[in-house]
Image 1: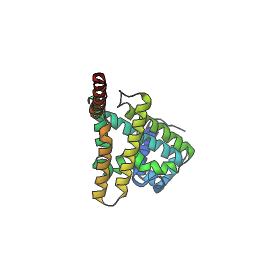
Image 2 (image 1 turned 180 degrees about the vertical axis):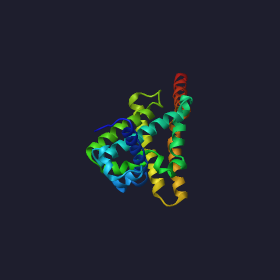
Image 3 (image 1 turned 45 degrees about the horizontal axis):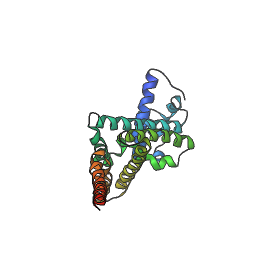
Image 4 (image 1 turned 90 degrees about the vertical axis):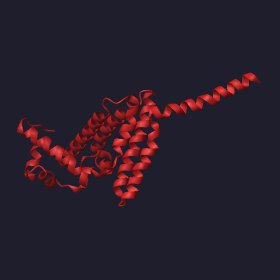
Length: 216
């Protein structure tokens, strides 16, 4: 892939940024090269001086969008107590504002199905970035083993992505809000802060049974 310096590099970055917004808004198949170039006020003919193919731009655009999403997640949770981070992350992801801002929201619910129909190269690039996203969420569970943390993170991300996708798909706002609320409730008990009382409740009956046995 060719890179240019100075003004050319700035133009390339503008194309990638605008493409990342446009693709999330209308989908991978909803924008032609001419449409993408119009977003930055350039002609179709100048496209190939920046990218070797339309697919190359699509891959770079959704990778850029995923990097931006990861950065936003980290900024949102920065400085929070560890036990509050996952709940805050879930609330931010499943808020109505995220549902309504498709162009600047997470790329997963916006382009996940499109990427599934894309080339193997595009899917490999997507998988690498998705793996980074899962690692970020897994880091919110320091008390778990790496395997457990990744399992929880993968499940949570899939639930949130699917919930946003469904909430956007339905035409009924009440149902859409209900979907987001159900997802928040389903994920709300996964934080370390909320799991602790459950662990204590489980241990107490075992202790009681042991004491009872000693009296027998």
